[in-house]
Image 1 (cartoon, rainbow, N blue to C red):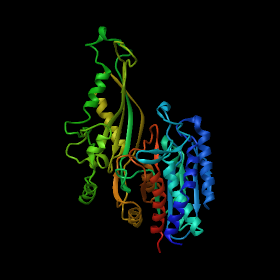
Image 2 (image 1 turned 30 degrees about the horizontal axis):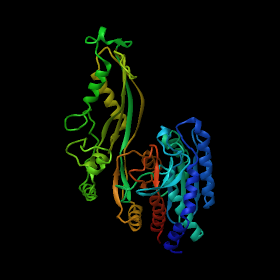
Image 3 (image 1 turned 90 degrees about the vertical axis):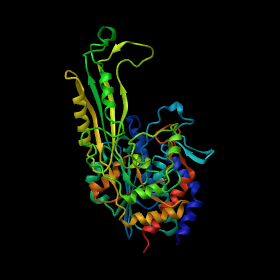
Image 4 (image 1 turned 120 degrees about the vertical axis):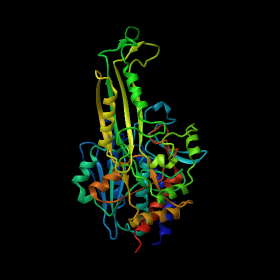
Amino acid sequence: MSLKSVLDQIDNNLPAATDRLLELLRIPSVSTDPAFAAHCQTAADWLVADLQNIGAEATKRDTPGHPMVVGHVAGEGPHILFYGHYDVQPVDPLNLWDRDPFDPAIEETPAGRVIRGRGSSDDKGQLMTFVEACRAWREVNGSLPCQITFFFEGEEESGSPSLIPFMKENAEELTADIALICDTGLFESRVPAIITMLRGLAGIEVEITGPDRDLHSGMYGGLVRNPLHVMSNIIAGLHDETGRITLDGFYDDVPELSDEIRAQWQALSFDHAKFLGDIGLTEQGGEVDRTPLEKLWSRPTCEVNGMWGGYTGDGSKTVLPSKAHAKFTFRLVGQQDPAKIVAALKAYVEASVPSDYKVSYKGDKGAPAAQMSVSHPAFEQARKALSDEWPDAAAYVGCGGSIPIAGFFKDILNMDAMLIGFGKDDDQIHSPNEKYDMESFHKGIRSWARVLEEMTKK
């Protein structure tokens, strides 16, 4: 059978594929809240049944947290593993949603038809693009074109605590020639993108304690150093006037871009003014001698995600607070070690507080950056397939976010990962009124069919 027959099948069966996605979206599989644990089980069961419907030997695998779903299809040629996650973010604040987040619907918008609901883009809609491509391929050809392993996680949105142990315990079963991950987006919402570079992540919460209780600011102010002032000075000192991060050794393991990659990124003609304008801003931050895409994709960051202390209610309460708190995260690149970066922050904090002030930490976490080699033939095969489907030619790009699973595939299973996704910048993932563009869903299914065809050509 020809590829055209598979693509025609996808086009003709799009309403049924959409109905299946809507059914999955109705399951409130929020992984972070124990109250939704049963729904995560239901979502896993739903996926097992759907994979079985397309001929996979699929099972639900228990973990200390939410279950994994693993399915296998036998075949000749390359062995492909496809990863996605069925869990979703919480929906709060619920009052900002225009409809029930777990009552998904197709909506007409000025930008076209969209699927509205929690998980529609991140990641159920994207996960189902691959499943639906496999369904159409099997319906037309009677079987899938190669050996495929499906690997669906239920804890991605809650830190994946069960993922590494599960991968290590089932390494032989999960190892394939290459892993495909569909949890990213189009570049500037139009150019099909293959992610080759992901930033890592390190984070920690810092608590500084000065006096042993909140104090009257009139009775003690001027003599006692305010912990919030101390924390503010620490935060202010983390960057110099050029935007560089001041921690000792911070840039030791940060590589420079190759001329080839820099030229590829420049050719994308990224409109940073529009990118900032879409969120109501006009001026750039970051290192002054770097391009916008370098800042977003290949340079490390230091961010303060929250800072608090003292009285924060309505009205005035003239206290000098006992404690100051701040949450810090770093996006990492190259060979930066999360533990080394957190240790550098601790050393800086402890050198910056008065000798009689106490410092404590919690929430230490981290994952290194991931760099994918495009030398594997699947990368060029996928780039051609995506370019054939979309108006714009596919591009190799970086990603400022962190998707640790890509690095885990390399470190634990010694296999390359290729990240391809069809989300758009305005999908509002993790926010109220999340959506998935119907064109992205449709063309995403067609794209995976083309990728399968290119990767399995004799």
